[in-house]
View 1 (cartoon, helix red, strand yellow):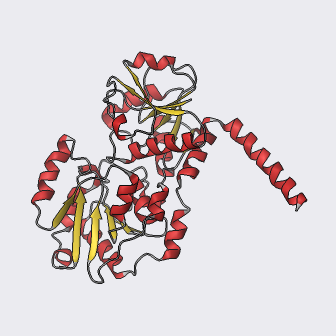
View 2 (view 1 turned 90 degrees about the vertical axis):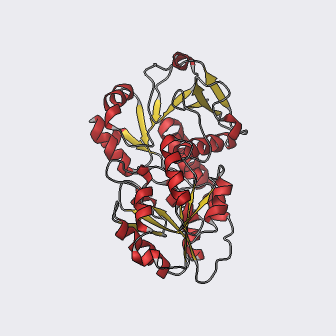
Length: 356
């Protein structure tokens, strides 16, 4: 059994962020392979988000102390508990460290194997924890297969649909995006249609920002999508997806929206910061972060390009897949077993060549 332990006291919501999609997608793929896996929550009972994921096993604990009784492999998500587990625990850190939590993060990560979603994040955590870079393992996030297989909707020849699909929070660059809408080259172009989703509007900050975007005459507000398939359909109706992630106090450790959008055939205009450059599947334009003029220039550059070709999209479909992500994860969790499997496969392949 592989138990993915969600942060205690927090509900696992659908359609609000990469950490959630990453966790659920990996559990789903492990189960598909016949490997027992579950999501573990603490202190919420059945109100822990399981209703949004009817195909995923959930286990609810009443307290963190019960984590010590978990059998099998324990993988903490975005921070570990002080509780000692039966077997050595792993920690998947999707997010960069926040200074106010620095001492606690370092203390609880002692003796735990750290897994991060990008090379950028590996360097970040190795430096912070004063560990060798080789001690920090990478398991890249992924785009579900529905993004690469979803049929794109016919687009109007002149109109360009541009989507901000990140959470409504300062970290995701929403204020840079709003500023960009008022730059002359963007504001005066009537053929550009801008939309945002309501993702993150369940949080206090998101509720305030939602009022701002709903009041903006140049924006269409779209309800957040809660499944990968619905998100793929939304991307398939867009030409460009923007990711102006904030770099002043937050650095995107990867940027799964970038990969999903490229798999769906969108151009992506993203901040050249953090792990976002690693998401390049052939359809990304990187711009100076926290700079509305640079974001506007990137959007105009994307507009001048032809639609993403079938060749680029086909190439993207073979990058950052859920199969690759889970393979990487299993190599970290069970390195000896995976090495044995690889050796068996080599022998089988060699014998098959002899038979031919």
